[in-house]
Amino acid sequence: MVTERNAEQTRTRILEAAHEEIYENGYQGMRIEAILQKTSLAKGALYHHFPNKLALGYAVVEEILMEHFHTTWHEFAHKYPNPLTAIQQLFLWKADTYKNEQRFKGCPLNNLNQEMAAIDEGFHQRLESVMEAIYQAIVSALELGQQQGHVRTDINPTKIAMFIMASYQGIMGAAKCMQAPDLLTDLFGTLNDYIDTLRTQKSA
Image (cartoon, rainbow, N blue to C red; front, side):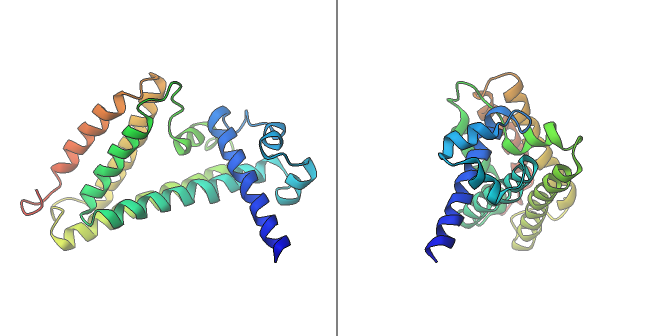
């Protein structure tokens, strides 16, 4: 049991270090040597868990990025029963999280989409799975909001969910390109103004 637990802890350390390296330098700029330095592991220990760099990159998407989305989404959905409020508060939290960044690196998922989705099918499939999970979560939240009387019934949840998701990615990308994380507050504020228009009179 101790060996299994230690092995799992080592694997987690490797994944976290790889995620940090990818966020800092991109997947193609990620160096195995840097991960070994961060984790104080021998190369053999890393390759015991991940046979190559590609397998490690795939695991970061499947396990780190997907888990981060589910954890964050569930936290806000649980805290704010009204799905529109939950989405708005998540955006405000994002803006507050990044507002003082000296070198704004953007959204980890968006970064990998831009870098790898078009050039590697394995990355494309895994990144698409994360995007699909986000999309379906928003659709389900809007549909539930309609049933509960929070969201207008004349809107199409599938179209609105895609628009919200694309808007989020565009806002994060624009702030990164301009190196202006302070813009996030205004941009997400504008998106939240739009989300307010989806409320019923009862929920407004």
